[in-house]
Image 1 (cartoon, helix red, strand yellow):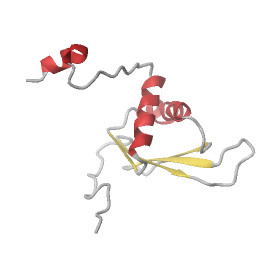
Image 2: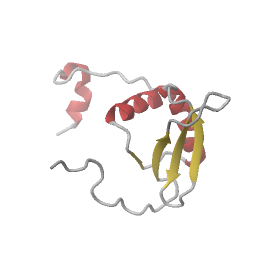
Image 3: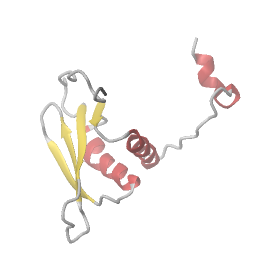
Length: 125
């Protein structure tokens, strides 16, 4: 028997609008004249307000990150939590693209080599 992955308990009821959102994609739609074949659905868990954004299924993560900043962050602020059923690779790529859109360069250090990231290690007791 394999247990289902994901959330096992019901998430807490949000206290403020757009603090907690869900996102999903409606894919495999007939292609629109602009080439869109997917709808990106982002929903506020408290008010149930939704953003429906047409995108291309093969569109870049950088494009998704820019849409997210424009449609969610600039209008409603940065959410406290995001619930999505996308795989970890999508989340990782989206996070990387979002940081890129914000102008943040993510430089990875090598594990167990404090000389590359010793400052952080020294602050942890």
